[in-house]
Every structure is written in C-alpha cells, then in structure tokens.
Amino acid sequence: MTDEQGTSGAILVVGGGISGLTAALEAAEVGNDVFLIDKNPYFGGRVAQLNQYFPKMCPPSCGLEINFKRIQNNRRIRTYTMATVSGINGGPGNYQVSLEIAPRYVNSNCTACGDCAAACPDEIDNAFNFGMNKSKAAYLPHEMSFPRRYVIAKAGLSSAGAEAVKASCKYNAVDLDMKTETVTLNVSSVVWATGWDPYDPAKIDNLKFNESKAIVTNMMIERMAAPSGPTGGKIVVPGTNKEPASIAFVQCAGSRDENHLEYCSYICCMATFKQMNYIREQYPEAKIYVFYIDLRTPGKYEKFRAKLMADKNASFIKGKVADMVIEADGSVTVVAEDAVSGVKVQQKVDLAVLATGMQPTNAGSKAPAGLKLDENGFVLSDYEKGMIGAGCAKKAADVVTTTQSSTAAALKAIQVSRR
Image (cartoon, rainbow, N blue to C red):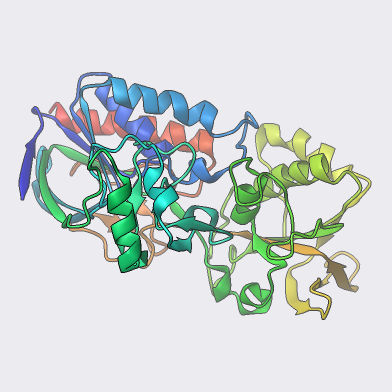
C-alpha cells in the first residue's frame, strides 16, 4: 500500500473523460493539487471514441490533444489509469480514499514502439471499437492514447504469446508479474466525473440487436466513421462490408421507456442528425428513414435539424418501433405505426442504427461510501460534504454542457478545500 499526500486542499477527480479533464485542469490551474484517475488504461473517455462532436463538428483530437498537453505540463496533477475507488473514510476537508490499480503488465519504460504487438500471436476483441474488429493482446488502446503506453491483456495471452511479447521488448517494459496495487490518497473533496455507458441494446428484446450484424448502435457508427476506426472511416454493414443503400435510425432505443431508461438521454437526436451528415458524405443518394417519438434539438441546433429534415432522400416517421424483422438476405425490416397517419409502416433497410440511450456509469453499481445516487444512477452532489457530481455522471448532457458542469464542479471542490 502507498500513501499519496497532497498539499492541504488536494482534490480527487474520478473519471478522466472530457468532464474529468476539465475539472482537474480548472482546479490545478488555480493552485490546488489534483489526483486524476480513470478505470480505463487511457484518458479521454467517450469523447475519444467519437468521430466528430457538437457544436464544432470537429474530431476529438481538437479538444483532447490540448487538454492532454496541459495535464502533462501541470506539476500539480498526478494521474492514475486502470484505477478505481475501493473505499472512502474521513470527512469533508480530510478524506482518505483507497484506490485499487489494476496491472497494466507494461511499466514506465514503454516507448510505444509497437514491437510487442508485432510479436504477439494472440488476438482479443477490440473493446474500443465495440468488438467490431480484433486487436493484439499487447495493444495501444487507441490512436490518441494518453498516456501513450501499451497494455497487455494477460488473460488473452497464450504461453507462446507471453514468451514472444517478453522477448520482443528491448526496453524491459513488459512485466507479466505485476500485481494489483493499493494506494491511499488524502484529499479535501471528490469530483465524480465517472461518465456514461451506452445503454445495452441486447436488453431491448424487440430491437433484435444480437440477431443481426445489420443492426448496430449509434456509437458503433461513430467508430466506423472515424478514420482510425475498424473500417478506416467507411460506414458499412459489419461482417459483410456491404455499402448500405438504405439506413434506418431508431430513436429512443431504451430511453423514455419505463422498462429501461425513464428519462430522455438528451444527445440521441443530435447524434442521429450528425450521423446523417456522415452518411451523406459517403452515400449522397442513400435513403434514410428516422423513426422517432419526438425530435429534440434545443436552441441553436434547430437550424441544423431543419437543414437535414429538408433532405429529399430522408423520411421522418413519428412512431415508436415495435419490431425488427431479420430478412433472409441479411437486411432488416423495421416495423412501426405512424402516429400521424395511423398507418402501419414496414420499411426494409440494409442497415438499422439504434440510437441507444445514455446511462450513467454508476447505474446498478454499489456506490462508494459517501456517494449518493438517484434512482437512475446519476450522482447527487453533496456540496457540504465535498462530494460533487460533474458532467454525464450528474445528468445526460452534450460535450458543451458537460464542460460547463465540470467547471462548476471544480469551483465547488475548490471552495470546500479552502474553508
């Protein structure tokens, strides 16, 4: 066990996505020591998986790259990856937080040269790309990985693979004997920026996600559209690489449903309009069908919506999807009732995209001591105790709203630290 003693007023930020990065930098740049942790082997969170994000319609590199550089250059920020909170003791102004740090099996000697991956004969599902392709069991999590250090999935290594990986590294960076480490941090307050997970589409029986490769999620589309993704930026039907001539978007896949997520996930409508842009860039004549309950594009996004709804090859059907029929040729027929006309619609498409909802990462898990969650798993901030929710851990939000929330969370944490 290791103790890490920050100066008086140190702040712990749990989660290293755009929300956690923002909160950590805001606090450190006004003089607080900050510990920034993430359960993944990299920082960047969900934003790192996007092809483009609103409102700039730019790749994640334009927002993350500068933040990574600021983190590197700020001596007040200490980072831990593959780290989770295992316990919290004490009270506001004087918390002792226990972390468990999982083994990376690669130490700080790593130069990210890639020799271990080249030598590794074993493959695993690529989690960053939602299993749409494989990666080596010795791998760099993604193109923009920070820290830029390889990871070894030891459970995916054969004995021959283990020997090959060890022998390949001329820097002695591979350490397959690494153990889980426990660290105790002394902090005044905790910012919970634990982010979100896409709602599991397999739980929505009528949408048949596990029954066809032609049924994907909106986050899978993001990875396909990304130049560094599993298809090199091409949106295709997974498994067959067929170029789709028709695409259906199924809105509120799990959201606004008392059997799944009872709330609106806020981002799904805008994600669909954004992805219609991706499709238009690649397939100008493709037919697009959007099945929706309501289309919610607040504020300045209304003009963006109007432009895409005027697309002559796009149809918008107000009706919740009741069923998806898997056809013999691999296509999918989407079944819904048009709420405006009352007519039953059956639309056959090459690719169906489920606009899955945004679920807080803490949903369904046992919260660490002192952290309160609402019935949906969102963090309930307790400012007096210095337990503060930020970004999508607090509510469903887009990137802009998330960063604003995280700046506010940092300010609250600073106030607690300086009482």
